[in-house]
Length: 171
Length: 171
Image 1 (cartoon, rainbow over the protein chains, first blue to last red):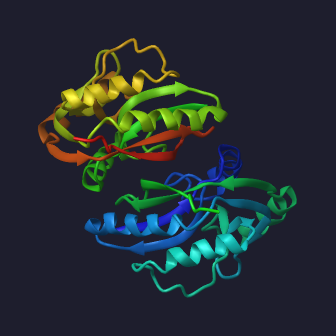
Image 2 (image 1 turned 90 degrees about the vertical axis):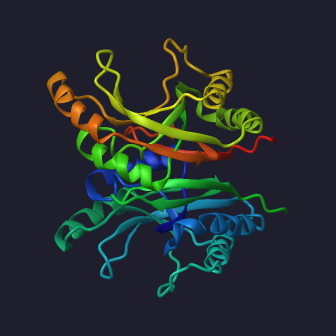
C-alpha cells in the first residue's frame, strides 16, 4: 500500500491553488492541494500503526512552522510540473529529514524542494504557454502549519487521511 | 465554511465502494468513501479550533465501534441515493447524538440512518435499473472503526481533513 505525509495549507491557499489545478492538474480529483513532506513510500497495510507511532515521535520534537510561498516555479525540463515555491526554512527541512529517517522511505534520489503543485503532466508547449502567466500572477502567502497528515492511497489513485499529527514540539 | 464529521472505512471497503461510485456518484472526486457521523454544518473559519476541542471531548467518552454493513439499500423515493446500509448499533447512534449536541449543528429534521453512499443524483430510471443488481451483489463487511475525521469543504466542493480523533473512551 502507498503512503505519504503532507501538510494542507489553509482553505484560502487551497482554493487559490485549485483555481489552477482544476484546469492544469490531472491529480486534481485525487487529493486536495498539499505540500508533501515525506514522499510516497510503500508499506504493508498492517504496518500503518507502527508508522503512525513513528511519525508521532517525530512530530513531538517539532513546533508549528511557517509555510511561506514566494513565487510560481517549474520543475521543467526534469518534469513539466508547475508549483508554488515554498521557502525551505531550516525547520521545514529538518522536519522532512526526521520523517525520512523513519524506515519505509524510498531512496531519496533528489533533494527536497518544498512545493504545492498546481499543474502537471502537460506537454511542453502547454507548459511553456501557461508558465509565464502563472509566474506573473505569483503566489505570496504566509501562514502557520501546526499539523501533518498521514495518507494512504486507494486503488483508484485517490488519497484518504489515516491520521493527523499536531506539531506539538516543546519550545 | 462547511464542516462535517465522518468515518472512513478500511481500504478494502473504500475500494469496493469506489468501484460503484466511479460510475454512479458525481461526488466521487470530492471525497473518498465515508460514513457521515455528523452531517454538514456551517461555522466560521475561526471557530474550527473550538469545534475540534468539543469533538475531542466527545470522542474521549467513546470507544472504537464496529462498522457492520449488511446490505445495499436506497433512500428512494425521498432521494435517489443508493448506499451500503450500516447497522445502527447503540454505540454508533450515541456517538452521533453526542456529536450533534455540539452547537453548530443544523436542525436534524430526519433520523440518523448510518450509511456509505455509493450512487446518487441519478434519474429515476437509472436508479431503478441498477438498484436490483447492486442489491444482489450486496455488501457484507464488518470492521472496527477507531477514529473520526473532522473535514471542511473547499470552494470547489471537495473536502479536506482538518483533524483526526481517536475514539479513546475508557472502558
